Image (cartoon, rainbow, N blue to C red; front, side, top):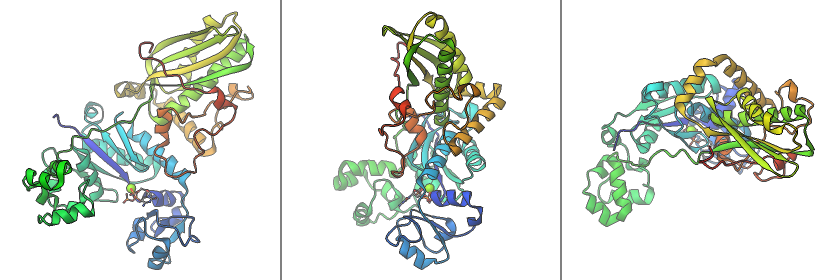
Length: 437
Ligand code: DCP
Ligand code: MG
């Protein structure tokens, strides 16, 4: 097996840290986030700031008990939307360094950065950059573990919280794990720990030293993998989820049109929508496809590979327009679609960053405004008053959009299949077969 470099990133006191970020007067104070806030006697603690933890307050404790331990703490209700947004912002930063990002909860993810060294440096360098960018851009601190396996990286990230960075070199995994209590090992709950105690196993090292067949006889297959893990072996790769192959928008006109102005505006709106979904997901598209259907339901698609992958509206729009213009001449157009595909690819990303950092910052600022004040706040003059559907709808069925949402934490997001505004009926995702793409 070749050596891999895996990072585990976990935000510190996540919900409480978001509250302290957004209300500077709470910094340095014990903050407890949970339930419906101070009046909710039956609720439990979701997150406790590190100041609150000094009073023994921790997640899953009853709010009543937390209050008993520290009546002076600030008690706040859970505000899922803001945490979701912060989660998305952090995940987008992680995707700058590798497409192999596996979010495992709202505030943590594994990254495989084995192939990122040439572009971004070694594991510890990337870990430091991530910590800096998360702090400067999202205003939160993260703890990071760097190791050759997921298990070791995860244990490492937890070791020096908050704001920690722990690096375990290749070959040092077993020595690193050895002194840790056996309960730290994945797959060892209270029962297994008690059973292992019969064999005098207290630490992970104790387990690693047991003859494997003895453990297998007592614990079966599970036992075999426990011993492997105790010895620092963990073959589980970083799963990058189920990445979207494409993202697209379609629009059916109420009345078939041959008006070039309307066609251009529609393409622009859809290009804006596509780009606005690529960016928060941290991916760029290499190919643009347009779909055109006329009044006799004849449908054609035309596609072009871009000279440089992009997540910006302009190149997507100009390509879509160049593809559509010769086709729609004299046609009564019933439906138009714009799809971006051929997503991702890190090497191509760095090229882009070198060429257009200024434009990029402007776009990202617009994105952040949109996020803050709602979709549709920032839009091009041309789209205003065009009577077009808001081009920024996400599609919850598309893995790309799900990915950019982070992992749902509670149900205050609108249900996925809620009948939305008109746009959603007309917005659908095109999966282009690979042979076409
Ligand atoms: N969470 C929750 N209920 C729990 C545990 C966690 O609602 N029982 C939420 C609130 C946490 C977030 O998930 O802020 C992340 O969980 P973590 O276990 O990573 O805990 P924190 O990020 O709060 O603290 P730490 O610094 O230990 O990671
Ligand atoms: Mg955390």
